[in-house]
Amino acid sequence: MSSPGSLAIEVTDLVTHYGPRMILDHVNFSARQGEIMVVMGGSGSGKSTLLRHLLGLHQPTSGAIKLLGKDITKMNADEMFDLRKNMGVAFQGGALFNSMTVGENVELPLREHTRLDDNTIRIMSRMKLEVVNLAGFEDLMPSELSGGMIKRAALARAIVMDPKLLFFDEPSAGLDPVASAELDELILTLRDAMNMTIVVVTHELESAFKIADSITVLDHGRILMSDKTAAVRASEHPRIRALLDRTPRDDSVDADEYMERLTREIN
Amino acid sequence: MNIETRDSPPFRVILLSGDVDLHSSPQARQSILDSLKTGKPLLVDLSGVSYMDSSGVASLVEGYQTARKQGLEFGLAAPAGPAMSVLKLARLDKVFPIHASLEERLARG
Image (cartoon, rainbow over all chains, first blue to last red; front, side, top):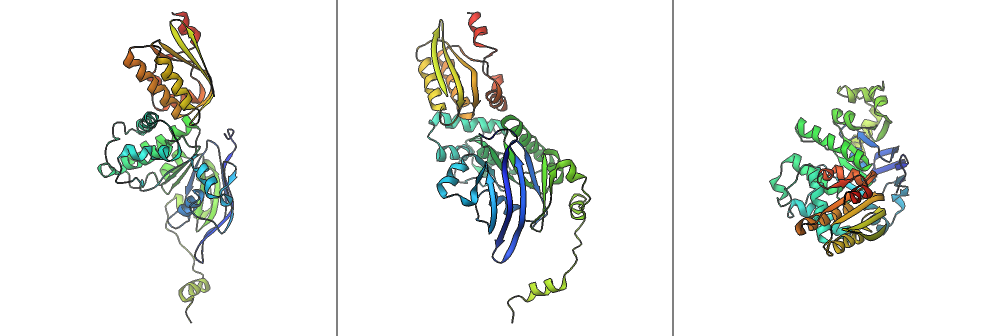
């Protein structure tokens, strides 16, 4: 087990592309065990791409991604499978299996990764449904749940194995303010109770400032800042201020680059 | 994880120590369920547990429910640190009979 305060996530010089287009440009950041790190940025900033790389879903162009001390860019499938037992993910849309009940969805990681007794698996998944305030909902189908309930069910599934690392994509998106605030409280409770390292990707400022120990601000694939929450809040960087003060971006136009984009591969 | 069982009439006592996790909790579960088959009230001492995950707590839940069905006393002694955190997270600290120490419960007879 990682000792308290040791680095649970360490991203070094991460460069990624979709085709010829560079999405992440030499990204560096780290998160300590038990820390809540919020990755913030506007649409198209690269935050979802960063999350997908942290989950090992894509191979980067270059750079290293160390999770719990191991570089996942150098891992084979078996090693990644083992590491995933220590990782939980709650996707933006929940990503529950529609043909399975809520309970079966939450039990799934345990059935996939362990040989625990059936009774133990059922009790563990129901305990996590209790934690996310969905007690007694295990027999419902995902289609019978509200948006907030789907997110909480996805969170229950993400934490059912007591992961050391929890990744949460846009917990507040599509939720009313009360449901969103409840989810924030839940994230804080989980960290305090289980000393999880939690990475939350969001563009919701209020939520970010409420839960984050540290904030990483991404903009056009580059890290503008990665620091303690108070330091980010006090930043004078114009792009960060624009994000925090919700001012529309006023991008200057580089004529050469613009023309190149419009006319690339045209003779 | 290490498991030690002993009789301390009228109780059966299980002393768990070390890490009770996905790998070791099935043993703890079996020991708890086997002990309850003796028909004696059961105390599980957690003072030596350095880490307990949800699978360990689930084993305690199953044990407690089995004991209740048989009308047997079931208690936890000295849960601390991570074990207590997991119990509290699911509000199970309000469900289990919890004793400050094994000695404290045994002294009451």
